[in-house]
Image (cartoon, rainbow over all chains, first blue to last red; front, side):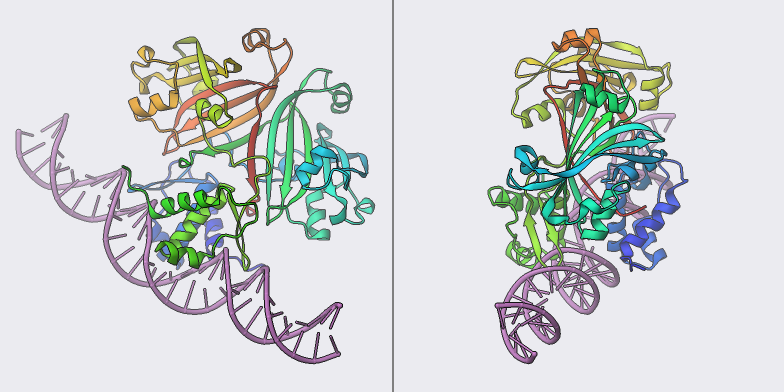
Length: 237
Length: 237
DNA sequence: TTGAGAGATTGGTACTGTCCAATACGACAC
DNA sequence: GTGTCGTATTGGACAGTACCAATCTCTCAA
């Protein structure tokens, strides 16, 4: 269907060839890959850049390019809850708790770049993994941008719904992660003892133009969830 | 001193010009930047790639390149505790708790790719920010790679010491973040009530060749610390 | 006033070619 | 053996060019 760019197709091909190679296995040289796949070396480098960014390979000048060992995690990607759970080999589910229109308020208004008195659509869901509670999720969307959402089916993937029905593509998200003590209501819903700790994630989803589209607060059970990601040294300043 | 690559120098120049521009301000076109700075468009794109990756700008085909609004956070970078605190405008400090050689054990051996019976140097420190406890940090280093570390001054930046004295450059790190309930000893040291929650970060530091160099467990006070980062949609598979 | 369409503008993709810098390796001297 | 020094190899950096695809803008007709 979608015509892929050469560097993207090459990236996928290289990734496929790598999957069952042991760590530190050298890839062919950039020049070899180029002639072998009939593309320019620039294109090869573009594909390798992406793989390196994703943590799939590492490069050493003068030595070569090698498949990276997976120590604990793949690089962090923006995923919906459903995708996230499936990646962890659990079956995602949802139970709708609340859905309706409310005032944005200071906090959410700030996140979504709206007036505190503006209306937002709020959806509260208990998310399940393999049938058991995993987290409490509260999504806030500007009412103006999602007319008629109240009538939609809110049991499935919200990201998919936003994309297909409203053309809202969330490309980037900014997240703040904290540890919190769970309150009474939260503990009950999550089926953990009162006073247990939880992982609190505040996320603002942004579209291609970095405009805020969605603000979500998620409260994960500490005993069932962790966040894994890789970080890199970045040049000073 | 260090001769910088053109794309890196350009990146810094563009970043400097952007700092006090309001969000969504358009940058000059790539072709303009190229002629203006006397470099090829390739080089400009390389510089912009880095800025985009860091969350400083966003690009829209057909429209232009714009400075990105800082919603909550800059992109996550690999930083030492000292750098991290200074970025948060707090004064970092440390109190040495324990330092010595121990057996690696299953867990640490696994992280550092060592035999469980191999020796590692372990450093336990209470880290302070503006004089008050911020986190408990336990660093594990393969003894074989850091001879004579016991005699070194462990009050300052460990990363700096590793780099300058042993040539160990930590370029990448993989992290796992969890929420935990603090135990008695931990609460006392961190000066918070027993049973309070904490943010638990397990990190494995890797060198340029993705070889594990350091394994660190950090336990942050939940009331003083959060983790902020940006995530992007990545192409499927 | 509004909508549709043509054309210019801007970032995205791709190729060719050239030189540099770090690394690896083998020859050689000791 | 052991270290040293050239040389080939490999990734990194740039320049220049050409064309494509998304977007914006301006014109013109209804």
